[in-house]
Length: 311
Image 1 (cartoon, rainbow, N blue to C red):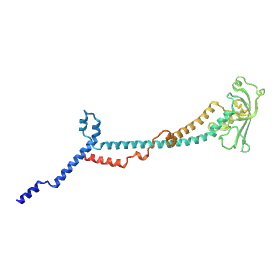
Image 2 (tube, one colour):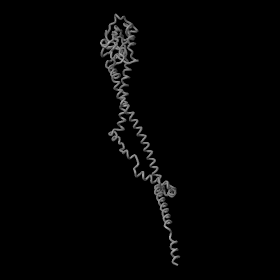
Image 3 (cartoon, rainbow, N blue to C red):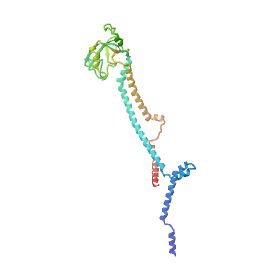
Image 4 (cartoon, rainbow, N blue to C red):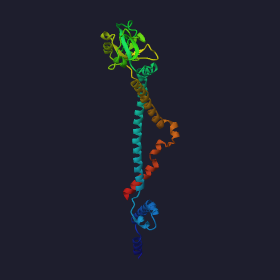
C-alpha cells in the first residue's frame, strides 16, 4: 500500500521540464502582445471611436517605426553629404575665380586701363583733321631710337624705329576732300610735330604692324594729305587711330568684368564661411556630430530589428 500511494503522488505532479517550457512560451506570447500593443498604441489612440477597433485589430510590424526613422535619417545624411560636396567644389571654383579676377585686373591696368584713361585725359577731337607727313626717319640702335611713331610691344626695348613728323591743320579732312587746297598756301596750325600710331605709340600684333604703318604714311606717301586726330589738351600730340566708342567700351569692360566677378565670389564665400554673416543670417548652430544617430539609438534600433525577425 505504501508503494502505490507513493507512485500515485509521483505521477500526479508535473515534471519540471514541462513546466519550464509552458512558462517560456507564455512569457514570449505576453512579450509579443505587449510590444504589438505599444507599437499600435499610437494608431489606436489617433483613430476615432468608430474605427478604433478595426485599427487595433490590424497587424502592425514590431519596430518598423524605428527602422523607418533610421532609414529617413540615413537618407537625410546622404543628401547633406551631397550638398556639402557641391558646396566644397563651388567654393573652390569661386576662390579660383576671385584670384584670377585680381590677376586679370592687374594685367589689364597697364595695357588697357591706363592707355584708355590717358586717351580720355588727352581729349582728342573726334572729327579727323588734315595732316601731311613732312619727314620720315628710320633708325636702328637704342641710342638712335629715343622715341618711335610705332612700336610692337609696349614694354619691348627700341632697337628699330620709324620716326614720322607731320604738319596738321584743323580743317576737317572731309571738307579737304571736297575742296582740296594748295599745300604751299595752307596755314598749318602745328608744324613738324611727332606723329604716333595711337595715344601710347605702341600696340601688339596683329592689330599693330609697324612695317605696314610706315608704308602707309611714310616713304613714298610723304606730302599726301590724310586724316589724323589731334589732342585738344596737348595740341602737339597727333595720332592716326582714335575711336571714342571703342576706347570707352574697352575701359568699361576691363573695369566691370574682373571687379564684378571678384565681388560676387567674395560675397558668396563670406556668406557661407564668415562667422559674422552666419550670426547675422541666424543660421543653425548645429554641431556636426548631431547629424548622426547616438549609440543608444543604434542599440534600440538593432534590438527592434531582432524582434522584427523573430516576429
